[in-house]
Length: 179
Image (tube, rainbow, N blue to C red; front, side, top):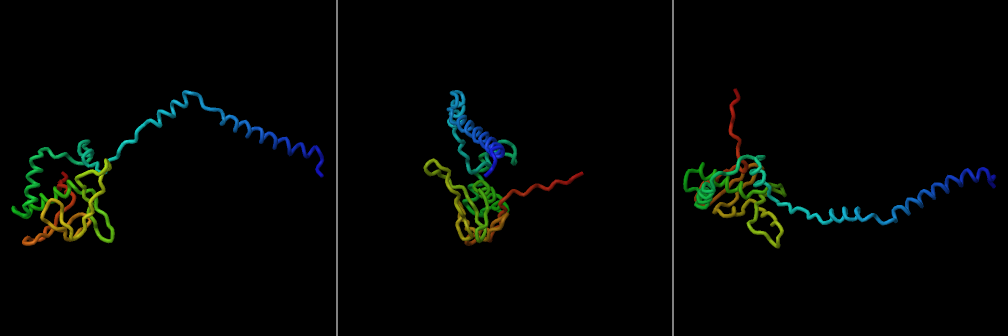
């Protein structure tokens, strides 16, 4: 058996530790003041922002990613050229198709092969629509062209009666000569 002096030296710190923990539990059990409750309620009342899937328009408007198109008539002319196929020169058709694809392209992923993610025009139930997945062999939306081979930066388009076109998916930077 332990002498009482030794027993006191062990029990007293243990009682102090238990007492401090009881005070902490009692402190947390006291309900918060009204102003703290009001602050918590104001945070709960904030609505989360609906994140859009495509932010390219915002980046263009903010000047962080190129310049926005100045004339919408040019876009309509490009869309007409796309729908007619390669009526003009193949370079003009490639440029028109490239612009058409760039307007709708949301991304390129690799899922067993390269897949183009295209924006769908309609929303469902107020939620942003899932992107349309286009693979080799699918028809390019709003054009008579069929997708041939897909690479990470370009796509081959084929159409019966026309030569295959290699269309760059991203704008090519203009060459700048330094002085």
